[in-house]
Amino acid sequence: MVFIGREREIGWMRLYLEHEANKILAVTGKANCGKTALMQEVMKRLGATHTFFYLDLRLLDVSAPEDFVKVLLYLLRLARREQNFIRRLFNGSRFEFSVMGFKVSRDVKFEDVLQELYLALIEELKKVKNPVIVVDELQSLRELYYNGGKKLIDSVLEFFISLTKHQHLAHVIVLTSDSTFYAELYSKSGMEKRMRFYLLDELQREEAMELIRYWSREYDVELDPEGVYNYTGGNPALIEDIVAKVALYGEFEDVVKDELRMASAKIKRLIKKGFSFKRIEEMEYEEGQEWVEENVLFYNVQKECFEPQHRIIELAWGEVLKVRK
Image 1: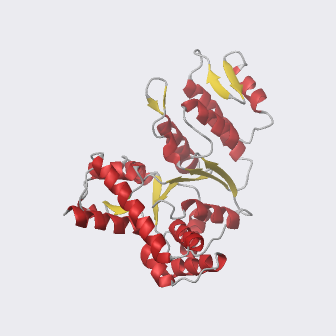
Image 2: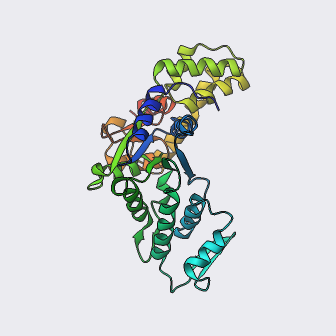
Image 3: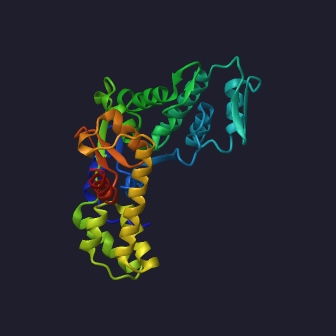
């Protein structure tokens, strides 16, 4: 995977990890702006001095609270002794765990299971050099409840706060592409003392131009970097996607028109479903949330306003707005 630019962000992340663990680092940014790629590059560069535990909740399929137990077991790196470990904790008779799933008997409290695994994880973390837990797409736990209404995300965050602010045992970095979830964390009482919030911008102009030139060489197409930048901004994934489609279909103008047409069609479809539609900067928080869920808008917690997820959506939104007026 190509990685261009982001030296400023990598330097900031390096400084964060060189200091004593004290706060959870929560990172968000527009869709496909490179959050995961940045974290992977940081892990690559600092792998000799830090021990990274990377969890991508998109791939681990956490659709029920019990699935998170498998995540903790994975994090503990207990692949060869999972079942023996579980039997030792719960004597085997009250607890079932297999390759196909996990189930706690009725006489075992799920929170006790979590507590035992949290304690086991703490002991594992003490054995490694400069541990860093990275959780990608933390919002996957957002709607999971256990024991009659307790939110799993609250338990997880309390554990992470213990690891960082209280024990200074490990750094914890959480990534989320859901900006409204990030906003909830940002506004949660007391979190400013326990979490550090980082909003990852798109690539700076020169970095984006360098990436455009790189993909143009890779796909062997001649493109005006300035023209591509005008339609993609600094979104790395959109840049590659546009250049790749030009290589496939041949005409930059046709590719851009098709992308604008599809974005406009999506916006119109959601308007027909009843989504509130107006100038983006006039969008109220409750109105904009549904657009965020559809990956059309992004909520900037620092500016307290909504923004288009990328340049194509911005242009399409303007065109639809113009026609409706």
